[in-house]
Length: 461
Image 1 (cartoon, rainbow, N blue to C red):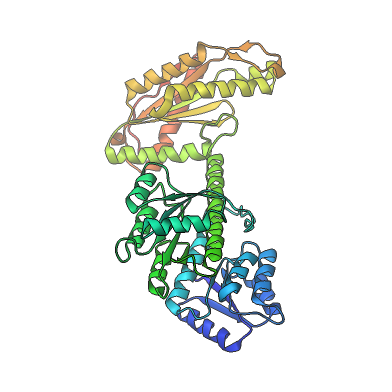
Image 2 (spheres, rainbow, N blue to C red; image 1 turned 45 degrees about the vertical axis):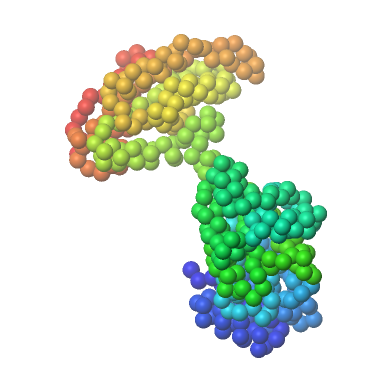
């Protein structure tokens, strides 16, 4: 889908030129010349990025950045400004800045970078966006400096460490890669574009971005002035920002400190979104009481295991398990006692099955075990081991339900499936396997409970 960009500029020639440049790059562009038009466009169209070329009406660019950040805190804003105004725009909430004289390749590379970062945040956020951290709240973290000389790296550290609540490590490319491979990546890497040779800093950036240990770090590339082509490549390779390599020049160190603080805060928010997404994924496939996989996750897994068995021509087993007379536990001791029993049995199932298969709670007192690459003898032995693990030890009840101990037993229906006897899809094989296990479970219940019943092999169509 084409990204939507809103160009806001009070100067007609600048506004038209920016619209033409972006439209030629196949973006969907709208241009506005007043604050009223800006508000209406954002409310109705929700652009992916706002490009501020200059002030609107009686508001200057910095005031506009502040107003947008307050009204739409998650909006990506690229401000075109020079000198001190660039720093003020960042402090006011702009996502990034560029000089108004920026050439087209650099402008487009910066926009691609910002849109990529915004899309990543939306993809991992699962609609749980949080407010952007203010600039005066330094997020901390570890920053690795990879410069073109140790003296340059030490000068960077001297200029920055008093402005950021971070720890700084000076490393060469080999040391940076080794630390990341050893599980000790930094939160942010500041890399000179040219370290030993032309462009080798960009190769280091690509290497770090491709490694699992460091791919989620933030990256800033430092280049010599008038190296816009190098800066554009760095942004396309995954750098979040580009800085001048000489931070001692007037204004550069303040800009660098703001940039690094912004990148660290953005990384912290990204880490938080990934953690939230991971928790949401776990909740979606986990039974909240026992911590086992739930029905929503387990049943499709049978089809996946059946598909693998058909490809590799090996057996697999499905165990349908049900606690005997479990209703009596709830009736006699209360639901708190029943929950305690279910949790205790779930832990015993996990202990027996371990990494040899998948254990799930289907609901109530029903459980399911799936054993890939497992034949009849091994599956029956495990089913008996599970049954004995439940039978041999009582469950301690919570004091809320009166305390004491309660003993339960388990019935198991076991179906071992041979893909060689099946003509049909993996989904049909999975359904038939589960149905056979359920029928064997019913037979176990009918014949007195607390036993394992094995379903007979059969050709299926």
